Amino acid sequence: MKNIHSMNSGPAVQAEADRLADFVLFTQRSCILNLSGELSKGNVSFPQFFLMAYLSSEEYLTMSDIAKKMGHSTAAATGLVDRLEKLAYVERIHAAEDRRKIMVRITQKGVELVSRMRREIASDLADMLSNMDQEEADTVDATRRAMSCIPQS
Image 1 (cartoon, rainbow, N blue to C red):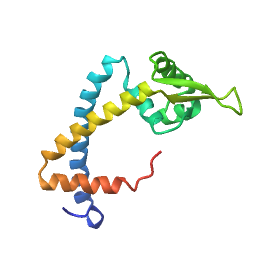
Image 2 (cartoon, rainbow, N blue to C red):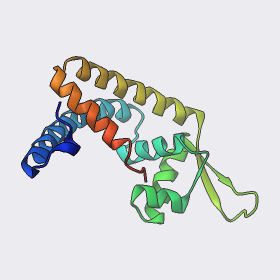
Image 3 (cartoon, helix red, strand yellow):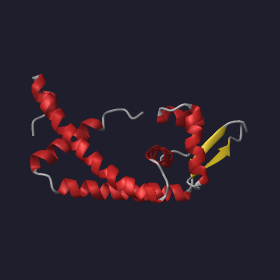
């Protein structure tokens, strides 16, 4: 596969970006369809699931952290947490140093849901990757390596 960094012309880079966009749209659609069916069983929305995914990689998040990560107001973040708390996927805890500070952490039930969905997504992606030709696989691999250098927000 061509090294994207060594491509001098804009059209070559754009062609690779277009191929990648097609791949992302296809995989996203497939993964979201599978997520949709599974999440609807537990009455969990996509934003709620994405919040749980964030929480599964952190000890806890404050309401302001949640609002920032989700791109919502604090009030909207509170609504997301309220619904997830009622379903026993997350819990609120008070900070020891300041009881007014509310922190949110994922429960074991939430961890299990996120883990199960992650395994299903990984399985779907493995199926897609196994059906790719070498050029497609090289494009995905190069993109994965390039994106691993992008700072996570």
